[in-house]
Amino acid sequence: MQRPLPSYGKRLRRASTIEYKAWWSGYRIILAISGLLPPLVMLLLRHLYSMLSFSEVIESGLVGVVVTVAGTYLHSRRKGAEALDAQWGQKSGQQEAELAGKRLQIKSLQAEVNELKIPKRTPRQVKDYEEVSAILKDADVKEITILDHLRKVEKMSKSDQSGLGPLPSNFDRQQAEYALIGLVGKRLVVCDHLDLSGRWEVRWRIADWAKPHVEELL
Image (cartoon, rainbow, N blue to C red; front, side, top):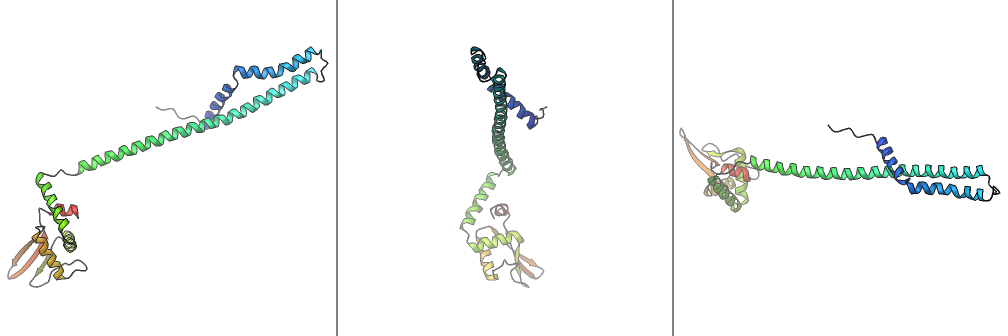
């Protein structure tokens, strides 16, 4: 189980402490102490005849040390915050890259699943599909319109009592029948002649062998 991430305050104090300790290395401690020692040594060599008293020298040195420590502490806090920001930016960039990779992987898997869902065609179905596709490429706009309309209404008919219908918009009966005759010649549409007890009726429907491929291509 992954441990919860410490609060920002704790992480800032940790980073600040690391920066603070890195700054106050042995050499810098010696350098800070050496800034306090020369005035003391000079004061002793002059046998206390300096204009400053011994206590003033000590106070002056201590004030310098306090200012130095306080200044480096504040500086370490700023550096710690910058280090946390840099770590967060790097981690955020890595997470974005990982998410982008996972999105691509999901898309790839989804494409594979969609491809597997498509039923495999038999050699006969492949041949029929290619034939329907070739016929549609050679068909004119009116034939394509009538074929798409016939796909939606399933059948068109005319009889001794009614004219051809139902018709698509912007088509008259003559245009529609002419297009149907062309589609029958291309074997995409079947024309059935029915004798209904002294009445006659003609019906047009999409050929069974071509219907699934017309549905797919249109």
